[in-house]
Image 1 (cartoon, rainbow, N blue to C red):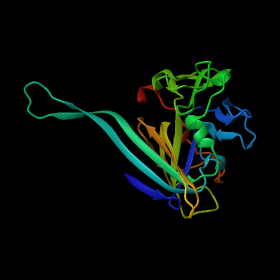
Image 2: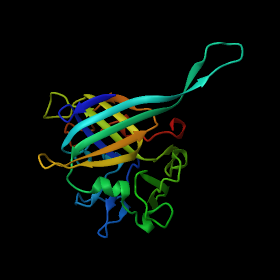
Image 3: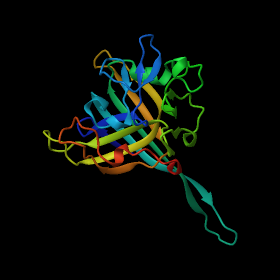
Image 4: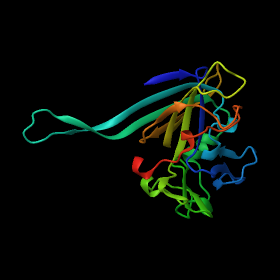
Length: 244
């Protein structure tokens, strides 16, 4: 487990869909959209924007990262030693930040609009991200669909399951985008949202993301010279079904 302060890292996040995100509608329900106008109703942006300023979590005070794996004992007839085989990765990221709005609570326990739900009924939260049935039918899934079944309509060997979190280690440069270290955790679900209130300090909220897909480590190179540009290359590559 590693702990970083908000001075050490920047945290960015997005959906796993290359063009669709999630907004809070005027009736307080959750809906998908491919059109963004930087208004206050946007909650999470699409994967193509990951690394842009608008995908950055603000007022972060701490980031807890735990990277591990789930193992299973295995033994063979005639051998005394018991070995272990890795079943899947087990990554947990807890981001603590000053509480500013209800957006994470909306994702965690809000209500999806019926017309934007994978079950056509709605009423469920958006902890599991987006599913892409067709180009004109992009919905918020209800958690009953496994990651391998959330197939990208435009690339049937890939999955849109969950959210993507990128932890960028701050560099010494402040003027242009540099190639500092970047930890990318794909296909996350929101497993916990908690609030801490105090009379003597600012209210805080902690959001925990969990993933069972192997994290990616590389540089934080962007498509342009400014930090307003999205990441370039591997951070925006959709996960293969064989990696889930």
